[in-house]
Length: 80
Image (cartoon, rainbow, N blue to C red; front, side):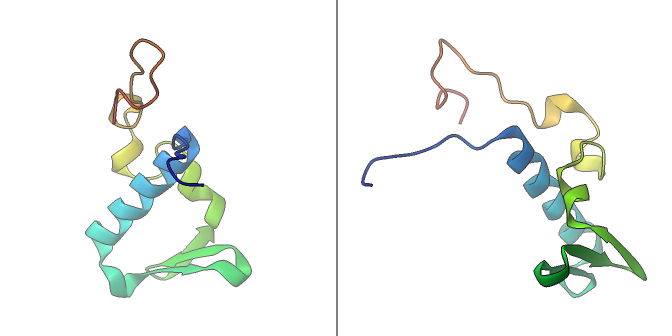
């Protein structure tokens, strides 16, 4: 569909911020998404992939102001 855009959900934004933070802090060689087992592996362990969606999982989402984007005048694109 040409011209169609859907706003990113808050859950998706949190997951991407958390993943980005892990990659920046640990490096690409130490963070692995194992989609076949729904696991996020890093260091000497790992967690279920759903943890990426949890606010506060990393320092990037510790403060809700860091990932919540205000919407102005009902325009979902105004904050992007």
